[in-house]
Image 1 (cartoon, rainbow, N blue to C red):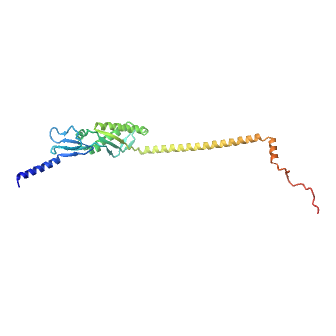
Image 2: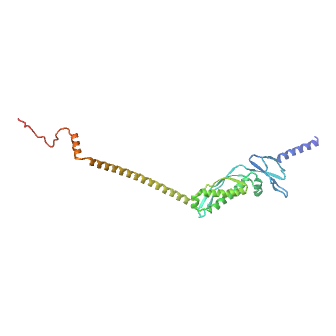
Length: 261
């Protein structure tokens, strides 16, 4: 076999292997980050690689993908103290995404993938946001103004994540009240319900009493009108109208003839 052809074949084979190892495809919804592994200029280039195929030197460079679509992180619950010392449990969930064009800066700062950043760095920001805001609210003020509290947490967390190149879409706090607070709220609700029930019963009783009073007053008024209308002449007239023409008998009837035996 001709050695020239052999070396040519080997060279082509090496070129094919090099081509496939030095080319990667950035999927849709991702940004590619090219990293210089050696030299004084090593680090993340100041560019965001668009979707599609990217060529790089596999011996001196690496390409990492960062998703820029919306993602959800459901963190493990943790406890936080309110301003007055009450202990609350927070079970947070965040929906977020990497701001387009910020992938290189994120990788340059943390040198980690998006999953690890989510489970560590972003989790710490979430904890800090709740810790700081809980220190601003007492138990009563937080419970009575929970919407304001959660808005304050979300505003702070959104501001911090934006500085890091992330956009916060939504935050769900999943706050669980202390057992003592829950029992107090339940007792208060029961008391309010019982008071409403008693009030309703009183209203029904008052309505029934007023009904009886009206009926009694109506009956008394009717009797009064009847008494006023019963004059002697009217009584005599009513007697005549109802008389059947017969003399009423009281006791034994008088005997007109005596029986003869």
